[in-house]
Image (cartoon, rainbow, N blue to C red; front, side, top):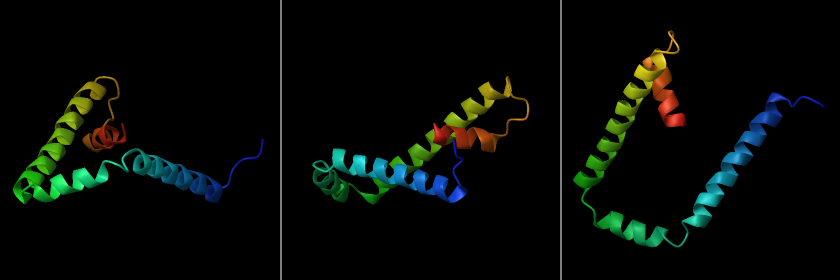
Length: 88
């Protein structure tokens, strides 16, 4: 079997991303209007608090991942755990 070039791999990855974005848009197409209308009514402080809570959750999840993975993989860094948290 012929190996794919880097350009072909990149193209395949971008096609997969576009397909996934298309599926998300397709699935939520009827809900976008109501979501946006409620989001406009929500105060900026509440939106900022939700964003902050989401980021804080990511940091806490990264800490948990770091502690658990450090027992198995000694050269694990917090950055690796953070990337792993958002990748998963």
